[in-house]
Image (cartoon, rainbow, N blue to C red; front, side, top):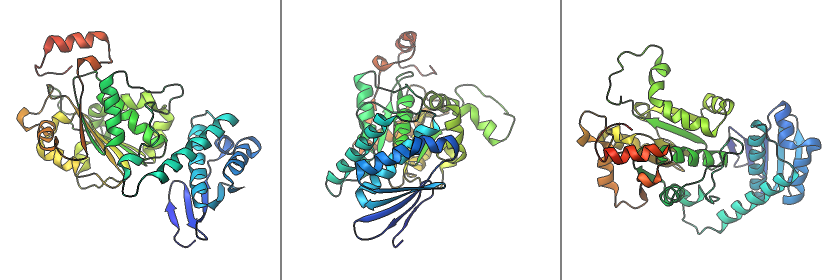
Length: 349
């Protein structure tokens, strides 16, 4: 196993002869295992025949041997089969073959990409406008031209700012894009962040431990997650630290690699907090910053980190700004009328 690379979630990968690879992929137990390997190990046979790799199943693991490229594709197929099994929607024969074809195309596209192009493109290389989230039968699609531009910006840039009024899908689409990248194994972690700022009223002392105290501020992010993942998936991901929902103060001192990090309600950050957050970005990560500059709840609105960042970074290479407006509102039609009635006056909607 010279040059072995350890993946704590999927097992180990070892390099053999030049151009060859051996990978051990851990399997779940019980009915989930059957969902991955298929009845009579049908799925493993399909992978073996379609990709020309050696596939053997032992207790608790599947061993893959073959050319580096085909083993890499086979591993990704097994990851997707495991995700489907855990969601209690095992794939049929045709779906498995489609999955193999999809992952083969993704890998071929990544090899064809010119040298020097970074994760900015490869992290979303199968994005076709349809976001694959975990809840069965619930694909998420943009509903306006601005929302399409927003998702394209997330796909093509590592740092995206989305600014617009309530109900325009700023947070929802960012979470959907992040879940899509997590499900398709483009990133390893999803981090949802919010400043703990009260919207115009003092809540006073909140009972309970730290988690109970910050939960009211983070509730909107949980609401978006529950639209895209079932409760069991969210709980499992949070217990394994794949999904993290945290107040902004918890970001200080961290470096966040291979993750999508979403900062919601960014208009309520200070300039210092925004700088702190933006400098947390690590290798292979994307950041999406969302906010509404007409709803600043910090004591001095002129100190808003979102407004300051828009001024400082508007011409910075690699940073995308997407502005949404009332035409992009996807809540109840009455929300558009409320936004029109209040105009640019500050306040929560």
